Length: 118
Image (cartoon, rainbow, N blue to C red):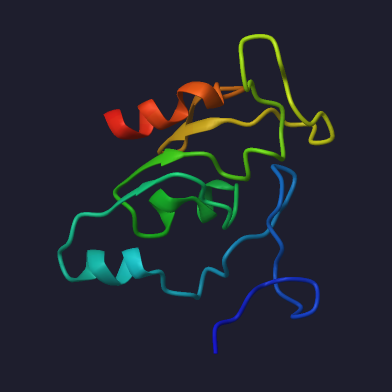
């Protein structure tokens, strides 16, 4: 049966930029398995499996990554030019290209276009 990490399972929870854990490094991702067979891999979108470099997609089998490392409702971002949302998360929501922050806070109203352009 699928396993969902969380408080009831004793697993690592990854909710914000301040989360220190991630998908356990001994777990094989689909991307790692595909890459081992010679496939090129790309991840676009929300990652939510760890925000430290060792947990990001490019360390977990993906050749390229463009996305946000946690949910769009968990950090400061811009729905429009004047409206930051949800100040409870102290780290502004970044847009990552690989492990490099290319925009912070990310402009969510243009995020889909950036994904399509990638």
